[in-house]
Image (tube, rainbow, N blue to C red; front, side, top):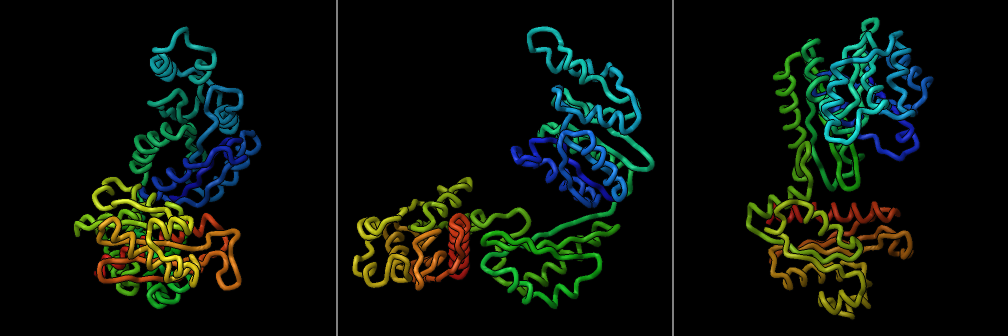
Length: 413
């Protein structure tokens, strides 16, 4: 079975609201074994909605819409669908009673707008919205299924999970669609593609690989489709084991793992601690570490040494070192890491110093030049990165790279 998702609303088109509904619906459909062909967003206009439906029905078996079912004048989805499916709006007593119960705690009588929400097309299956007043609608026309749901996320999510997906599973014999994502840090997409080229070309027809890069992290998603869920899962596991053996310790996790949590688990397991001295990252590394619940077990603290005065006065970097090598240098970042570890009495330390940009670069040290150092009692490892010209991206990539260097130091210590 194939599907298309259509989100309706001017607020989405103008960028005022981010469309998270499509992501939730697509994930739910995919997990159920229904392929998503396309995601479309249209404004609150009759012609736009009907146009999108006409296009979607040419290729998709199931079309799921969200938005435009509220009680205000700009909510035209229900009226548009009634016309599209040549039906009439009629008062649904069950929906009316549901709305009355929903607003019973409010003063006054049920309003005309609320009454209108109980008027629904006479040729659709009604899906009661247990969390709101806008009911869902299920139409069938010429072998296609059209489902309209409210745009309020928590209402829509519940209806997808509790009503739509179970109904589709009961109606159709759906194949297994399984994904496994391997998470990598420290390797560029192009380099990784060359490294695993032979493995990728040897994948069986039921599997395919997708590269999903983001700052500092590369996701390799293996997707499999087949009638037998167990057979697909087994094939994915066998192929992922081969892939992992090729990549080695650049793999830091799988699926929904996050690097900062992976590092935290390693420290907890070893009952070890870490401290951070940040310059160009401005506290981002500390933010990532402390975003993990329980990080107080292993994170002692940090110093944001943005100025040379703090580097010398608090972290103990000598003025001569800064004068001779510059604040963005291997010598300075090594001193920062070694000294913060001693100051906080931790097992490990991380230090950064760089030129985040967009200004401050020179011909010898252009914007994006970043030195990162990780240290333990007997190892001090420093590495230079050339990250680019975008400030926010540089800060994030430097922070991710720092955590990955720390992860590898812990594993090899």
